[in-house]
Image 1 (spheres, one colour):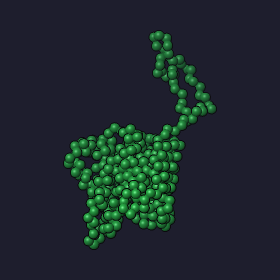
Image 2: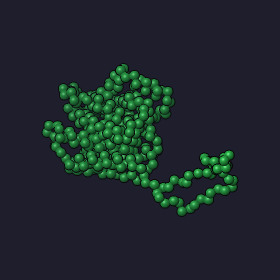
Image 3: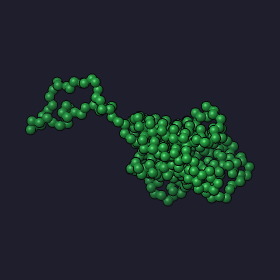
Amino acid sequence: MRPLPPTAALTLVVLGGVASAAQGAANAELGERVGSPVLGAVVNNAGGSLLVLAGLLVLPSMRTGLAALRRSRLPWWCYLGGLGGAAIIVVGTYVVPVLGVAVFTIAQVAGGSLGGLAVDRAGLAPVGRLALTPPRVAGALLGTAAVGLAQLGRPLGELAVGLVLLAVVGGLAVAVQSALNGRVAAGTAAAGTAVNFAVSTPAVLAVAALAGAFTVARPDWPPAWYLYTGGLLGVGIVASLLVGVRALGVLRTGLALVAGQLGGGLLLDLLLPGGPGLHWPVLAGAVLTLVASVVAGRPGRRSARTSAVVQPVPTARPAPADPTGAPRRGSAYADRPGPPAG
């Protein structure tokens, strides 16, 4: 799968963020109506898994991609990216009621930004190793500050340090998920999406069973069809992240996703009946987070100053000459480039 141009990849990931906001709203309402937030997450992952199974039946590219994965012999841990998505679902279910949405969102984005810097620096994503440049660090800090701005005016819960750290770890897990899924999707995004759901769904089912979600007595399943679209939206979100990571790296992809989430949440507030309407801090946060994604993609400025210590040029033997008597280009000494500045 060839990477998209950066602008196209950013646009796709922002749209994935808008879908993520809609998915979160649908899952939350479904969980509230059936009496179990975790059960809403189960329906979300089950719906995505059914769509993936349907894709296996009708999309030759997905089957071809999975066959290529079997031949690629990737390390086993590359296939565990879906656990990151399961982790943030479970963490959010239990942390949000205590911390509130505002603190949880800020902590998650902070963890995702730190994780994005780390996995990009380690070369875990398919784009290879990305240096820890000032623009990338500035983008991560600006993105976290922008999300904090977007949460102004929202109620705060109990500031439990342990739960804040758990939310940060959830953000780190999502960054690792994006990197690993990107490696798996080297063939096709469809194959990477299938692997993600194959790993995340059993994990969510196991957590739901441990939490007693399946013991809810006769859950009242609402008839509204849009509450069951979480799986469909989830497939689109995972696919957009796979494409984004291959073109932008984990940090920029995460920031673009958050910008889309904030923008999508603002649209829901404006369009849904009884919604709170326009919230200026959210609009400003969405714009600044998108700016942060652009800033993080700028190349680091190379230092114009050379080293104070000048290394002597070896003169033990002259450069071999070609038959015309000119120094041979590409020899050990002729036209040797100087050390990179900075």
